[in-house]
Image (cartoon, rainbow, N blue to C red; front, top):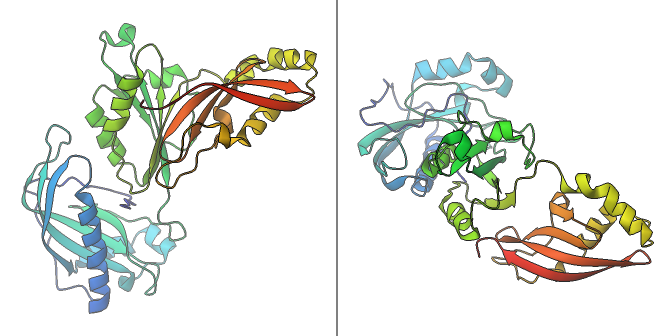
Length: 354
């Protein structure tokens, strides 16, 4: 899994960027140097699958020493907090032949491109962690207790001719943690042309810059604007660089359907003798994954894992989202209640992308 934990991340492998002045080989044991080099080598090998990379070949890779860079790091407040000392810092220089798809990313292809890596470790017994990379000498910030924090992001897909003046498909990405995965974001945030883009390549470039992005929730703003096939094409073009990740698809909701319809649904159910709450209906469905008419793939198990995505629509119907961690879909179910016992019947279902 490729991790970007930086205070200043400058991974723009631009042609013509030179090697900063370096001194002698790093004052680390050969074993420590080799371990740091191996971490960088594995990282670069993984970059071959990154968005926009056509080909990447490592020309050379070596541990180096740059007193200016090391002293800049050690003099920072972050270094004091992390307990860094010289033997906990490794500098590695790499030279690459790299070719990019210029229609997707704004990087310059070229031979013998330089990129420098700063690695840190908690102590000699712990592995090296890439804390910074690029051509600059930025600071480093790493939480050794959680060096690989997983990130989630949201992508809203929409059209709004009145706002944009065209029929293009627009994308708005949110990667802040303030709301988690929140399909109830206000329209004013989503329909913000300063934050949106009509280029899915730009979206992929934005996603590639989110450290350790493992979960992307895609929300369709309007069911009439896109067919299932069109949404499947969009999902198929999205790229997440984390080795283990998932992309889910849902519909934007201005407010929770359950909160809007809850009162009159409960009243109707009570007239039928039901004494529970709507949560009892959703909780009961969660206990019946056998209702899902699809098998899991790649070792996944189908289930109703997200209670917030189970919507009690009426006193007869429920719309439920299901997945196995790899594929997902929706089901429309009919439910009947007899003496607080709930029975289910599947009315319709589909897998996303079909």
